Every structure is written in structure tokens, then in C-alpha cells.
Image (cartoon, rainbow, N blue to C red; front, side):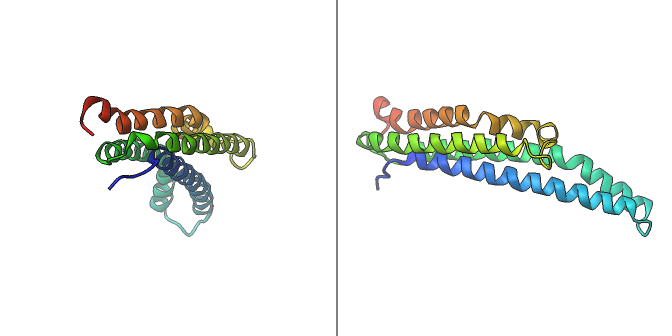
Length: 164
């Protein structure tokens, strides 16, 4: 079975998933911060509970920052593997280019939306708390171009080598 024009759709899937996960992580940080402030201010909680809450608040950005990057890299690798396994005819490359252009427009919009969101007072500390996510979303357009190019090389390059 041949799959048609899959480069852009796979790339679009990845950028949307990563953006949604980043927003979820940002909201989770706000929740963890608020919860920790409530626990630290409540005298009913033991010193051990307060220490655990503070530890969670301290570790959350590091763990979640790495988790989003891990997700991005693993899905990118999965997309490359699926692109190699999928039997796509080179004729559909034109359709893929059209979908890639649309995907790049979406990536640019998401990156601009992220930049706009980071100017909001509630989210202004997120770039320093999550430097890897900040880099990823600030450079989403360039990374999307690299991803689409790598998928195109894997997807259509196998015909030049005789593997397809």
C-alpha cells in the first residue's frame, strides 16, 4: 500500500504535539507553584510534607523540560523510521511539498504565538525555567524545515539507492 504526501502530515503532527505538551507543562508549573505556596503557608502540613512539596517544585522544570525534548526527539526518530518503512512513490513529492508549505506556515504561527505568550506576565518566567522547551519553540520553524528535509531524504532517497 502506498502512502501519499506524508512528509508534511507527520511533521505537522510532531509540532502540534510538542506545542500542546509544552503548554501543558507550563500550566503544570503554575499549578505546582501555587500548590507549593499553599502547602508552605499552611501550618497543618508537617515539615516533611513541606520539604517534599518544595523538592517537587524544584525538580519539576528540569524533569519536564527534558521530557518534552525526549518526546520531540523520539517522535522525530519514529517518523524517520516510518518514512523509511512506508512505500511512497516519488510522484507524490509535489503533494508533499504543498503540505510542507502549509506545515511551515503552521510552525511559524505556533512559534510566533509562543513568543507572544511569553510576553504575558503569567508566563514570563517560563523561558528561564524551561530553557530547552524555549529553544525548541523559539526555533520551531528552523527545526521543522530540518525535520521535513530529513523525512524527505529518508522517504524519497531510498528510490535513488534502489531500496524502494
